[in-house]
Picture 1: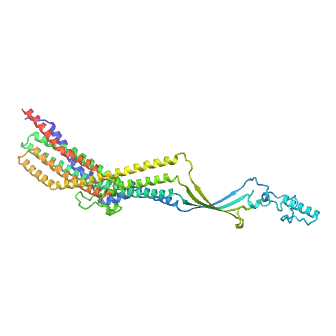
Picture 2 (picture 1 turned 45 degrees about the vertical axis):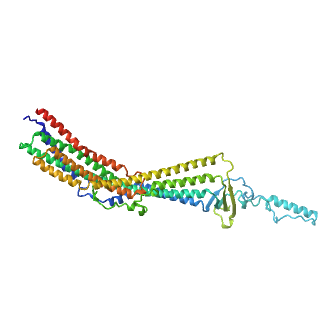
Picture 3 (picture 1 turned 120 degrees about the vertical axis):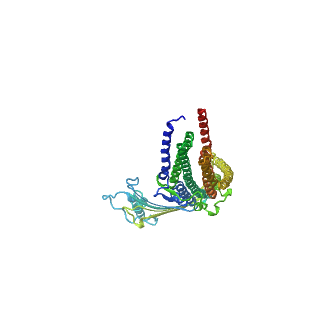
Length: 543
């Protein structure tokens, strides 16, 4: 019998890898440490809502839309503004006139008794001349001068105080109503967006939670399969030592065991990524240990009712209640109002205005109450466009095009929502059917593997039969876990369907499932082919 020296080294190296692979899960798997935080799906949903940036952004948008609605409504109400101003003149063109002129102490005193001049033809000539000269003296030297009151009127005054109120009221403006409808549609759209973001968050957290739970399950399945292959290798080695098995069977068992190790490593990496994504959604540290307590087989409904604005719409599959359709409908309302605004530019606008003011020109810094004078005006303003160079017509064409586009997008959203709703319902039915089909398969595969182990120990079967049974058990366990995860995700999606965006949570899960199942489905062929090749090689070598 020809012997080689390298299988023993490979066996020792594989045994070391096996020991590491079996011992690592307890320390590496999130949630198995004693200090791990127990986390239910309901707790995860509550934590995520408080830490979600998209939800906070949507809430800020709702607050902004409410403020815009208040701004639009204020255009219907009177606008009243107050003002208070003070100014000091450093130099004035009216200096030297009236009260603003400096006092000359060397000049003669001003004339007295400067009343109104009334001619009297009955007086003698000399008296009439004296009265004319006195009136002229009063006119020239300030007694009854037309410039003598300039100081009271503020000309040349150093200090000026003004208190004013201005009032404006729109009497006729057809654009105000359309602007209010745009603001109301914006608020409705912001409310829909907030509900949609909360529902999307619930969907993301639910999917991340069950993805992490599924990753945990797949790691346990892969490690159990590795342990089974390692046990088979130990049995074959023992049989080879007593001369009941050839060296070829030892090598084949070792290759089958070692081929399982990359799958274990991949499953652990997938689990780490799944837990990392869950922690990011919950705003937790990247190394925070978690213990997921909601299992894949939990038949209770996903607790998403708190994320619905109207619990009566949970699970509603009507297209008209879908959030994207409602948002598209509000956009049509906005464009219709924009078209009304564009057309209303041709109509006149009428406003009432009023100005009330109190002004004082004190000699000192602060005025006295009796020094204020009153100004009060009331008016009306009519504005109508006469020639705008085609601007209004251009605005109308733009608004009409925007309206046609919004209407087309609404129909597009309705069609897409109909397809998306049908897809969600079909996926739920498919997931339930797959879960129902997998019922009992795991027990049957486990029983078949037990029988295969007994047959192999008794020498009634080969390693190929045992490996096939082990792989079938691994596939059945993985398919069952994936089907349970798909049912939970599909149920949550259908429940939140009225609030979710189009295509939310639709294809991502299916792609992940195929990625997880594909290595397992190809595993029998990948293991059987090397075994057949090795058998041919050794047979050829023996011959």
